Length: 140
Image (cartoon, rainbow, N blue to C red; front, side):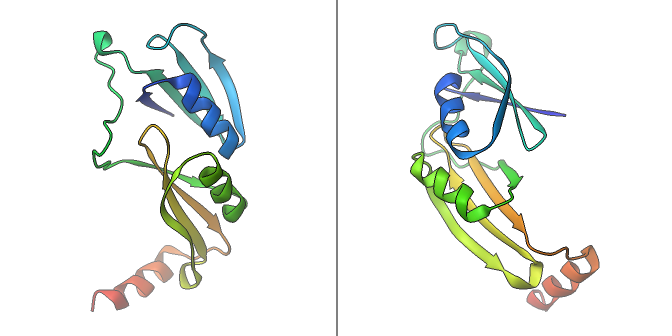
């Protein structure tokens, strides 16, 4: 499986991602902006990022547009990863929040290209049944 997405400048976006995550670059072109693409892995998930190029109907997110899609990444140390993101000029959406009942911490940020990333750190496994029981109390 691979996530394909478009950014204004894939080489610049790659540098930001490298400063946040442990990125394994698989392929990277070195053309003028508008013609580049990068294939990389983060924690075993494959991403294929392409430069915006209207000629090929490749459009990056527009500033201010709401995203109904986000990347959800499980990380080994959420505080460290989140601090790297903020230091790399990401925009805070939600700071690190511990959800004790659910056994996780999560946080969200928007990268320089406008994509939203949700980080998770799993502190303990909580079964589906346990999660439903916890959440059903909120809906009563």
